[in-house]
Image 1 (spheres, rainbow, N blue to C red):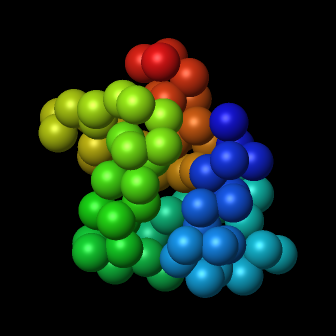
Image 2: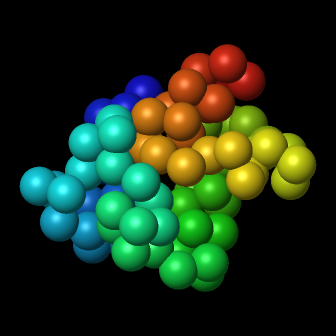
Length: 74
């Protein structure tokens, strides 16, 4: 799952592959702004066929958190 999210970040959002690890924080690590974060969530929802609950979003701090969330909601 992480590799698929990494692929989105590299190919669709043009982030540096060397910055992307499961422990990378979305905001402080990658420097994502709120629009980029929303784009990532929408792309993940479309690609993996899930819906992120609004109340769960604040707990998704790292790429590993996003991958685990997707895994648990597929």
